[in-house]
Image 1 (tube, rainbow, N blue to C red):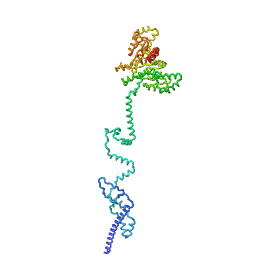
Image 2: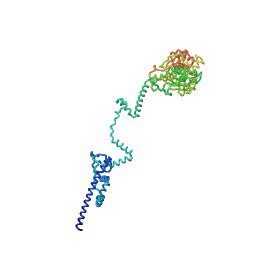
Image 3: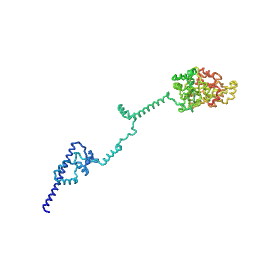
Image 4: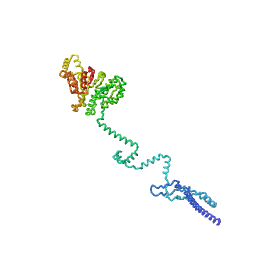
Length: 543
């Protein structure tokens, strides 16, 4: 090869080398100018959010390990994405390529096909660079978008675990609402109350109501006049059944029933149901029984061997309102009623475990005696008499009342002399029991309860034997019979046929049982309340 050709080839190589260097420098200047132009144009058009090299929004986050921002160098992928995002304008490239020669265009194409060297990203502002979001944060945001409810529960659980609670107040320092209320002013207290839940306010009001009624209940129980004792159990009690006509004075109503009939009688009772009935012949006797119960409860608080009063009547249930009003008005402790509505109540006496039945109707008394129940017809005194309110006084006749009517038969058939001979002959033989022997046993059993507490002289029960027998000729057999029965009588009065009325005025018994009507009538004249025991019924009594 000639020397000229070698020189020409060498010149071409250096020219191409210089052209490559010039193209690189021009390309770098164009990219810088286009980058500046693009950044200024974007900043002038709209204030876009700051993004990092991967397109994430920049959030001025600081590193957890130090207060200074992270200065990690961007990776190759970040610079590549950044250079790809900054594209050159088409007009500038076409103008430059048109001014270059064909050889330069070919070299430029070869250079564009080659990878460009890494260039550091241009800062968009003067703030320090911030690290991009980590991979875990991007995964967390994806999970939050997929299941927001589970994500919210997880955040709440983490916050509860990280939260530090203050120490709880020990139970000894707890205070009730009444104690806390005194530490606040009135207005502040009202504000606190308005902020309390409704349920808590209701509970506090209920507690205050319960405390109030508990105090009222305690006051009510301590008041003697307001306390009402419970009735005794029937199987342990001494049951006294009293008719409404024996307990109260119902003469006017009885007259309307006999003259105008049942309907007018019921209409009369309903019209006057708020009118209190006046006391009847058995009223004072019932009051005395209640006094005995009160004394027994004082000595024996849990005593069940008490008197139990039952109001037994054939009145209609509508009349019961007037009877209840009258019972409550006088403070009678009668809890059990039997209103049969025109039917005889005798069939209910055994069901009520009756020990004694008192009525103003002699026919019903006879029916009760035929049923084997001790009964008597009540009669009121002809005049008022002062009765003892602190002691139950019961007077008994001897023959056909406490004892059998054996002696009565001997006297009527053989005379009084044969009667005295018979009593002297059988002095050591006890007499057979009479219809009211069981009631005397009940009274004696209660008396022994007071004797056990050394209350003999202050015993609220006192019994009397008022008999027409002679003490010298026939009195011994009576006393020996009572001793054999194990019964005590407080006073024994042998009158030898004398009238009983004056003696009964001195005794002033609440009730006097006798089998002879002329003794009953004589006692009535003196104002004694009597109870007639029908004659000849002692053999049917099982008491």
